[in-house]
Length: 181
Image 1 (cartoon, rainbow, N blue to C red):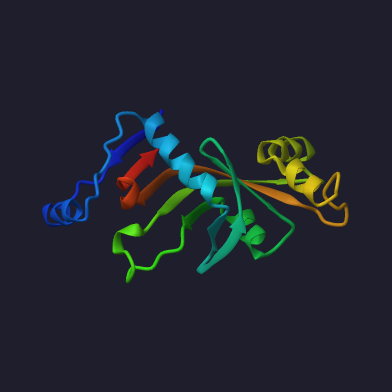
Image 2 (spheres, rainbow, N blue to C red):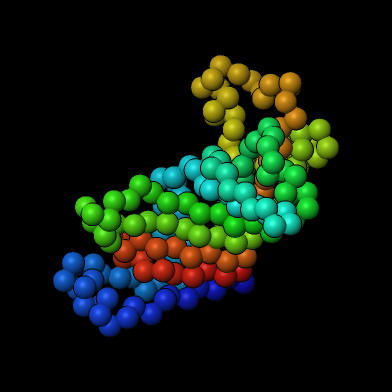
């Protein structure tokens, strides 16, 4: 069962928040926090996936879809798959554009840690197609005038189940809330 923990706001920072008219929220339930997080996720479509093999980290910006607290990425290739073959542990971040000179407290972002599974269209067709449905890829294909993904590529889906994440968005009242599975 997931849990949440609010990072305590240091007293000097609380005074700044009060001056800036930032009212922080305290989530009474995991569900309430997850709903607030989902609003952020619906506004964003790119995450930066970090994988690692040996002593070689790799970070890749990728389009994602989420279904609940599970994240899905459709991709046709790249070095990330070699890393994932060796190490299923991943990290990712999602952030909105931010300019601290205009509004220091307008940052919005998620940092997550979890486990990735890879489903190949050729090797895991059932899991692959189930994930495509959750991603609602049909809508995108229809807009492109396509009925299915091109057969020339061995598309794969990366499914990420976070173990933990933290989300901060002060202007919407969220000061570093930690979610853990």
